[in-house]
Length: 142
Image (cartoon, rainbow, N blue to C red; front, side, top):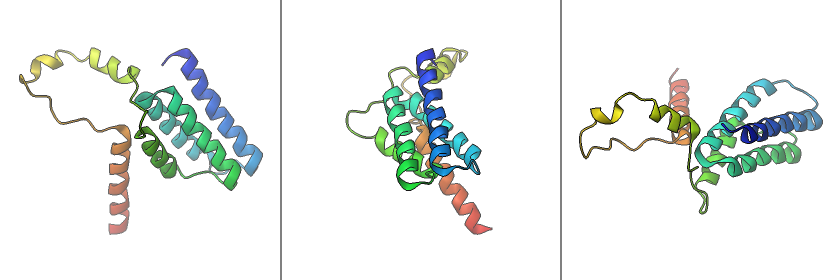
């Protein structure tokens, strides 16, 4: 992650904490929410780039200001998914985490059959949605 983008991300997380303290006056439950917000912001940054990350962070802050409560992590992820699918928003041209993992994979291309491209990879948001559905189903069965 580039230094300027990392500073922007950390600045957004600091501002979210400040807005939380200003509007709610309590940190009860905030560490868990902050962890979820951090994961979502990082995923948005990896998939769609810093501009959409700014938008998602701003929506979290606006929600706290207008509703005087923290948005659920699930709602933040859902909004981020919808925002990343809007026209004009394209996946980041370089995903540092993914490109570095691919470049260090030993002889991965030699193991593939010619003409086989494998299943299409799931995005992070699709994976989160899928795991949430499984979690909900498991909880209802217990």
